[in-house]
Image (cartoon, rainbow, N blue to C red; front, side, top):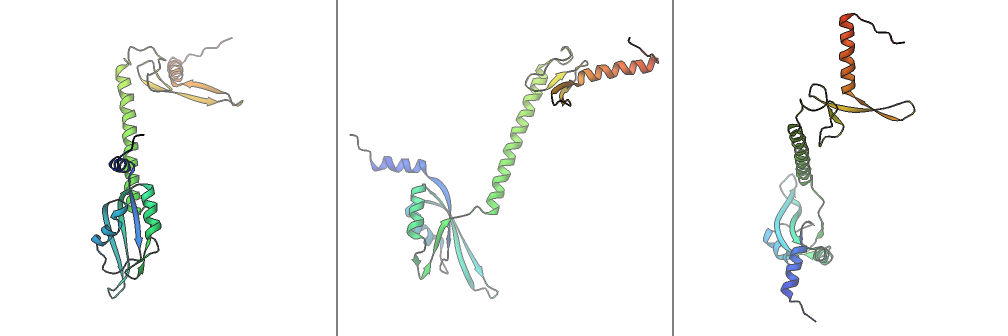
Length: 201
């Protein structure tokens, strides 16, 4: 049976590790970043420390808390919380828990998602324009479907027109091409110009 070295397990833990944001509340006054790093570095790699102090009107500290960005795995994180939460640290009973996503980070995440969606929309528009360039619009037969773009066809004069689906009273869906409408409209306009009325038996 092959025994795996501790170094191998260490690298596996690094691959499984993810950056977690931890909230530490009820800290003692005058705490430093170095104090927090020494206290929490046993459970993962500390990436960032943010200490916040709330003061009263006279400038006296009334509440001290901190946020830690720690790269760790789920097991080490749970161990950290279970061991340090509600424990005494310099006469203060600290609170350790997974931090809630703050408004600023949530906003940055939403902006990144919007940018990604806009990039996808632009990519689709580029693909559509490339398909239109490849297709010779003027020489195409009227009614030819445009490749890569659903429900669009080529009109008589090389323009792209949509196919509209309309439901009848019996709720059956029928297709209506603007191509046919344009041809009919042009024919009707010629009738009006020549003041000619055709009566069919």
